[in-house]
Image 1: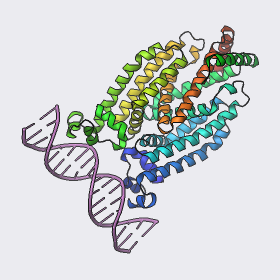
Image 2: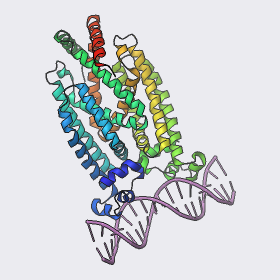
Image 3: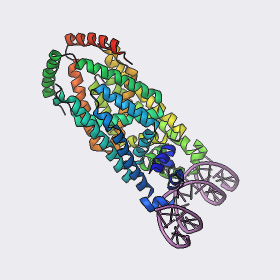
Image 4: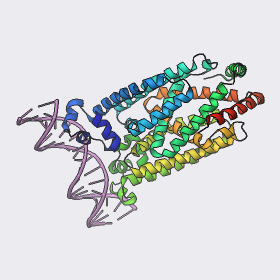
Length: 205
Length: 205
DNA sequence: GTCTATAGCTGGATAGAC
DNA sequence: GTCTATCCAGCTATAGAC
């Protein structure tokens, strides 16, 4: 499975094969079929195992997050580290492989779900007791965060400077939100009242 | 080039070949090499042409956007339409193909840049005269929006319901932002002053 | 469980007829 | 510009020795 992931990182989904994977660890090509039945089966197994490893590694960090900007910081660390390890390219390959490889599509969805659950837990913690909590769909936002992160990862794959710029802009935006958020109870109440009115009239989806 | 994109949509980067592309239009496999030198060359040419077509089609819509939520709406329309046409899967294939196919990486970056420019123009229009305009990095945010959109597209590829949830949550968030934004000059001035102070002390990146 | 060997296929790419 | 024919490399998957 290690060989599968590293072959995928190096050669992409279109270059990977039972042979290239086996060569990665100096093993024999036929073993892939003996153990995993098909190449796709091996890739799927490797994907699930890999996601588990990554999640374990970051669960602690997630638990320590106390603000949106801290979440972004963890995201950035994760981004840098995972990129160095090549796991970003890996995700791209799985997403691409989802077209035409149903088994791969399934495990990729499962992997993203696992990340989303983790993020939703963080968001729930952050917004417990927040005046606007009732107007936010945290499950949906967690999905948006996961999706956005995936997008940033892939964006960096083809335009590193652009991704940097995006992260910086988001950090600045996070700062803004925090400031607005910290304006105090008077503003907070005003916002709350206005939101309630507006939400009613516009019919929040 | 039409054949190239449609083959890519149907079979993914790992399934595409000079033969499968040629078969798509009942042409001969050797023509790929005659006209484009390599398969990768054909894919790159097709990518650029496709991006141009998409952009033309949405430039008008972008020009009519008057708020963040309208931008999201256009994004959602774009999302639905492009997904129906299979252009989402296409983008995933290009991003994945960027690993190991340098020419593909280059044109993919170029395509994303073109979208980002378009979005930055919209953001600039939206935030001209806005009290917080000076604290926002619009170029970076445009990149973040493009990246986020790509992520959502790919997310939907493996988990359609999840992407729906993300879009809904973002819409709700957009509503919130608009409400806060419309609180009037008093709050607006307070935010501005506070932000200025905070930005100075924390040193905005 | 791991190997060799091999069948059968599909791929990129070229030469050359038309 | 489009085709046929072809070379050769690489692929999945299996059979069977060890």
